[in-house]
Each structure stands twice: as structure tokens, then as C-alpha cells.
Length: 429
Image (cartoon, rainbow, N blue to C red; front, side):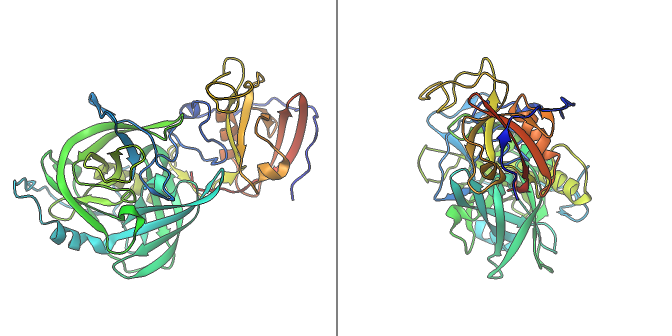
């Protein structure tokens, strides 16, 4: 049950506000508390997972002075845990002019490659995200990109080699590194991928990319190429106000498409050198790209190992999160521009000058909607703590669990209100 909002009452103790994540000091308009665990980066939904229908993104490649004019980067998703299979020793990369037997290499890896499909909650309703994953333990743990499951309310995993589907849950995600670990329910005795020793990866080494291109399912798509560059920084955005910066990426000319996110980039031995994550494409096209990027294997195994060990980290978010159901930005003096509908280019009106979390949108059917929050309202306190920014509201919600009660005070024009809601179970960060 949700308490009805009532006219303003004193906000009570000012209290100490949990510190906001510096990365949460995002540009106005970046989704926030409606996906309350948040993104440690400012980018949202511009990844090269496949949206059905696909939501095409705008972005740019930046790295080592590299800028690809007229292109956009879209997202296609301790040390290593002993539960993971890591190639031992070192090898000499088989750099040849004749290429690589992609079919033979893929045949060794495909049994451990899966299709990931997520039902995702969006401000306008629900949608579907399709990507790829890699089985990393025989009991059915799967690693994929965070962006493949971001905002998900349910996830399913299909093992094409077995013609079998499993329900899956998200164990934890690391949004800043774009990595998520899933658990297939009721799975056992599954084949797993083997990760290459990252120090062995060389520029010019032939590689094979394997994935659920275009979300078609079935036998994975396969393409071959080489490692073009190491340690590339990549910046991508959703074509609106947010962007994400990933560093240390592998660049490959293996051809990738939407839906390949989370799939393996493997060497001639079939060992995973990276997880396919992003590619440059022409805006509003569905074409494949040979300017592609993968998260190095060492980073993947490090994050997965930390999740498996239960390591406490500000970067790793365990699910399920608490959920309010609002898209907010920071309100206050000096922020009167750049928010559609609230001033700035193409907007109407002005950003309220009262410090707080400005409500940009409310997800239907959520606690925020039940409470009566509307776009244009400004949340000024939560749980007795003053709210002066979107990050402050995020910090309050992240510190709570689904089912807990949360008292809010907010402004709707000149009128002050307060009410109490029961936080719901939220989508994945």
C-alpha cells in the first residue's frame, strides 16, 4: 500500500546525506533513480545490444587521437577466480597473411556461447534487449555486458548448442566496466570458455568474433579479423546528453553487428582474448562494422572473480536493487538550460530554482507514480535527508532494499507535499 501525499509538513532532521558518487554528477537529463543502482558512468542505452525494435544511438570514437568522422560507437551487451578456465603458459600468436580458419576455431568455442534476451523497463514502458554471453562455470554462470541486461526485469538464456533455454537471474553488475554476471537457473554440466592470458595478446594476431548478431538466435554468427590496437579508450553516447568512457579496450577489424555484445573474441587456439562490446556504425543504420572494440580478457576475469568471491566494491552492484520509478536531474540556480521541456534548446519553461532532484519522467505503475509525482516536481528530501542533487537521491535509494518504506518531500509548483512509499524491486543497473 502507498500512503496518499499530504500537504507539506516540516522536513525534520537535516541529518547527514550519504555522499553522492562523483560519477553521478551527470549532465541534466541523464536517467537516474528510476534505475536506482545507477550507472557509474553517465552513458545510457546507447550500447550495441540489440533493442527490439532497435534504439539506434549516436556516439563518437575517441582514442589515441582517433576520431571517426560520420560514425558512431554503439554498444553491441583480486584476480581471476579459480572457477574460471584460464589458458596456462604463453603462446606465440599465429600472425599469418592467410588469415585464420574461423569455422574450425568457432566450432571449439560455440558450445559455451549463449544468446541472452532481457525484458527491460523503460520510461515509456517495456522493451526487449538481445545480446550474447559466455558460460564461465559448468553450473551455468554466464558473463555478458552490463548494457545487455541494464534495466532488465527478467532475463532468459538460450544455449544454441543444446537447443535449450533457461531462466536466468543477474548476480551482480559492474556498470563502470560494462560487465555483468548471470546465473542460469537449474543448469549443470555445461561446457565453459577458456580465457587467454592477456599478456600474450599482440597487435596483428588473428581473431574470431562469435555472437548473436541482430538477435536472430540459433547458430552464432562468426567473423574473422585481427587485433588492430591495444589499450584503446572509447567514448560512446546515446545521442542525447549522456556518454560513457571505457579504457584499455582491444580494437579489432573482425566484423561485429548489433546483438554481438557480450560475445567472445577468441584467438587461433579458441581462447577468449576479449568480450565484444562496441562498434562504429553509420547513424541510423543496422550495418555491421569492422571498427570494433572488446573488453580485454584480464579485466573480464578480474571482475567475474570479484563477484564470485563476494568482494565488496563500490563498482560492483548486486541485485535486486530498490526502485522508486523516477528519471531525475539536479535542480537549482544555474541549471536553467539543456533539459527538453524545462528550458534550453527546444524546451519550454524553466528549471525550478529550488535545489533538489528535478523529476523529468515517471515510470507508470511504480511507487513514484502511485505517490503522484509528476514531471516538473522537485524532490527536496528523502528519509529525512535534504536532497540537493540527483546523486543525493540515488545515494538514499541505493542504501535501501525492495520493500522498505521511504518518506519523500517534494514541490509541485509552489505547493509542498510529503508522502511515504514502499520501494519496489528494480531493474538491473
